[in-house]
Image (cartoon, rainbow, N blue to C red; front, side, top):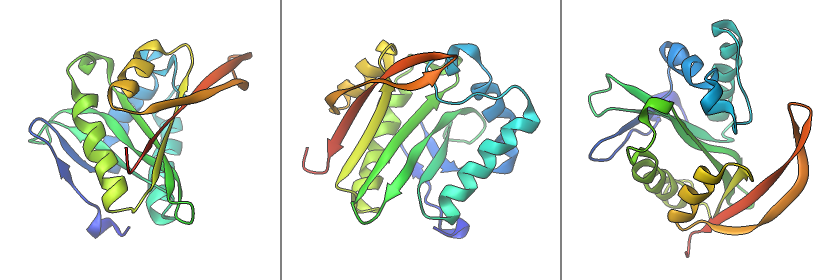
Length: 179
C-alpha cells in the first residue's frame, strides 16, 4: 500500500482519505476527549504523545497490516474522525475494524455511511473473508451501531483486558463476506 496508491473513498456526505501528519491536531482532539476515549483502547494527554498514533497509522500501511482513513467532509474542510482496518492477516483473510468520530459529529449517521464502504473495500480490494469488531461490553451505543450494520455477536471475552485498573469484558462481532 504505497502512499501514492492510497485509496480515497467517497459517499454522498463523506470523503475518506489517507491520514496525514497535518491531521495530528484533529486526532489529538479526538483521542484526548474523555467522552470519546471512555470506551476506546487508547488515549493521549498531549499533542506530542499523539505522534505515537501517527506512527501507528503509517506503520499499518508500510507493513501492510492495515489501512485507516481520515473521515472528512466531501470538500475535505472538516475532520470528523477515523476508521479502518488493523491486525490484517492475509493468510487467514481477516482484519479487525475500528472507528471513531469526534463527539460533535455523533448521531449524524456518519458511521452507518462510512462503515459499509470500509467493509466493502476490505472484502473486495483486500480480499478479506472475515472482518472482526471488538467492543467493550459496556459500550451499548457502539454495540447497537455495529449490530445495525449486520455484524453478528459471536460472544464475550470475560475480564480479558484491564482498563483503569479494572478488568473489562469485550464483545466479539464479525461479518463474513457471504453475510
